[in-house]
Amino acid sequence: MNAQTEATPIIEMRNIRKTYGPVIALAGVSIKIYPGECHCLLGDNGAGKSTFIKTMSGVVKPTDGDIVVNGDIQNFDNPRDAMEAGIATVHQHLAMIPLMSVSRNFFLGNEPTKKIAGISFYDREKADHETMEAMRKMGINLRGPDQAVGTLSGGERQTVAISRAVHFGAKVLILDEPTSALGVRQTSNVLATIDKVRKEGVAVVFITHNVRHALAVGDRFTVLNRGTTHGTAERGGITPEALQDLMAGGQELASLEGSLGGTV
Amino acid sequence: MSNETKNGTDERVNEMSSFRNALIRPELGGIIGTIAVFAVFIFLAGDSGMFSSQGVMNWSVVSAQFMIIAVGACLLMIAGEFDLSVGSMIGFAGMLIAIFGVTFGWPMWMAIILTFAICTAIGALNGFICIRTGLPSFIVTLAFLFILRGFTIFLPQTIERKTIIGGIREAAEGDWLSVLFGGKILQGFFIYLGDLGVISVFARGTRAGQPVVDGIPMLIVWAIALVIFGHILLTKTRFGNWIFASGGDAEAARNSGVPVNKVKVLMFMFTAFCATVFATCQVMEFGSAGADRGLLKEFEAIIAVVIGGALLTGGYGSVIGAALGALIFGVVQQGLFFAGVESSLFRVFLGVILLGAVILNTYIRRLITGER
Ligand SMILES: Nc1ncnc2c1ncn2[C@@H]1O[C@H](COP(=O)(O)OP(=O)(O)OP(=O)(O)O)[C@@H](O)[C@H]1O
Ligand SMILES: [Mg+2]
Image (cartoon, rainbow over all chains, first blue to last red; front, side, top):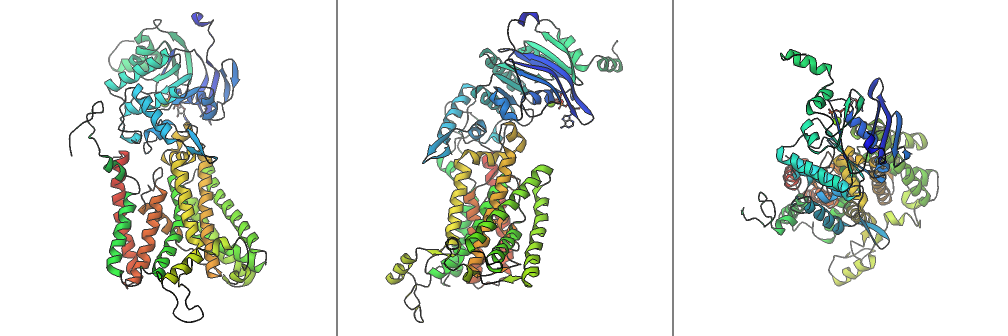
């Protein structure tokens, strides 16, 4: 990581531990995220990826360890704190509320208001207008701002969630498996969106199971395995096979290949 | 359906006319139901006095009662929770007012304010228990249904050795706050209408010449005010957005920074507030508090809300719809009486309307939200 010693990380996670009673979900994970990079977080099911980014976004409080944002140690008490620090998250299953309209979802938690007779009201025109604008930029044609999110496809929902995060000035964008449920075309749309966002200087943390998706947009790769990490690899410094190996956790892959008749 | 497409839009979406767009809304089922119910009763009971001034006042008051509790139940249901203790809360609140104001002899305004404070605090407790334990509000408020009803019988029995406490009207005489619940407005206007001959007047007796309906009871004013407040809160404020989100998907709402717990507790408090408004108006009207008041009101509120298009599991609904549901409920209940239909058939009608409304509402909701 010598190449980046002069740049300061926008967010640094130091020795994050998280236990749920006897379950050790994270056993001391450290990573640094730099502006304008796409940092891929890989790992098998249950490796602790979601738990890790939940500590980063204020949803889960780490049992131990520090979160350093722009050089200051921060303790996020709730998602709002993290959002105020510029960290926006698109969670694995819970990105949007399907029964609500796109524009109401888009501005959820950040609703624009206008004052009428001293009382502040939800500024619907502004919300609708800005939502349509943002959607157009991302290449999604809505029927109208009133269209319910439930009527959008999975990829469109992801794109709405991503553009929402960017719209509210996220400096770090965390995406938890945004491509796992998508077809080829929608996946490439989401990957293109990630690329676009990164070029605007936003740091993207991209969680995926899919090595090819990771290699398509990633600058650096961190593999989590059973709550720990074996360091971070640079783009070009690791082969897809090696990455795949790390993800499956060496031994398990070996026995798997053995049973399939491969060599170990 | 036409296959025309607008340039630049998704070619798989048929263009929808603005008329259709304006029509497809959560309250549509309630609007259709209201029109149908009025059509039926104009036909069945048009000349029975149902649409004279007394008749209109009769079903308006009943509908307004349903509306007051339906607004609270509606917002709470949209926020993803139920309150089954509404009926018991009505009995309990009425009894507290009677005990404070009559048995203890405290000034009525103090009795009312204290009752509001205690009841909304119980609402908050309901919400707090649900949030802390993660138990479904269905169970928690079911417990409070029994607890509050138990106290409503126990308290007057131990203090007064009876289950009905009267004398509230006398105790409230000249009280500034009681007028807000038991008074009437627009009395001058009704006398004017009576003089004009638009509405009927007493033909003889001490009140000869005065209109039979002599003003709009505060109960109706409360109902309209609460409906307007609820509707604006839900659709025109950011808090309203949080109510939808909390019921639609609490986890996703939390992740977006919505204070879900606060929203839910506040909605429990608001439901309790509505129940107390109902109770206060009722004791002022009857002049007494009884241990059996408010029985089954929680279900009537929920039925009105569901007729009005709200989704039982939360995240979707409309206060206007709930108000129309309450109106349908009141008109059917009183209309069958005017039409001279056997009163036991009311339940049959109610069941049919409920089923029809829910089927229609589900269909409308799918059109809007794309649920499958
Ligand atoms: N709330 C919780 N209570 C108890 N254990 C939990 C909780 N949340 C996560 N865990 C445990 O922590 C471990 C890591 O889970 P996590 O969801 O972070 O995995 P993941 O890497 O995101 O997996 P996937 O790829 O399937 O999404 C798992 O063993 C899980 O069972
Ligand atoms: Mg996960």
